[in-house]
Length: 100
Image 1 (tube, rainbow, N blue to C red):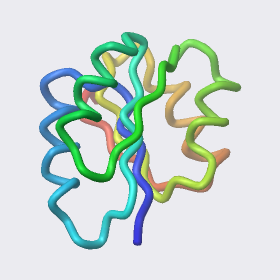
Image 2 (image 1 turned 30 degrees about the vertical axis):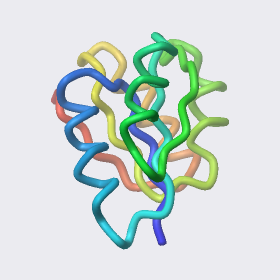
Image 3 (image 1 turned 90 degrees about the vertical axis):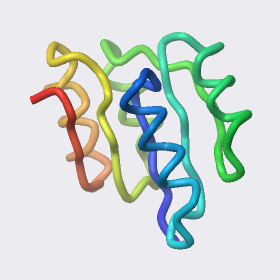
């Protein structure tokens, strides 16, 4: 069973989270966004989710949030890619990016 974090729960991130929620191989989805209300709203639509507030400019917080995750899905704008990739490397997680 895989634990996945979706960073950025806008149109793309939320769609991916909804599809992953249906997959039997996914045990937990962390919905992470700077806007906690958006993360919480998505969590409430899913069966396997938790919501956290996360500022992607803070590398240490990204790394902490990614610990234990098998996959990081980056739904943020291009400017955040390097920080999210660094967090994926530190967490030894696979990385999927929709921005670049």
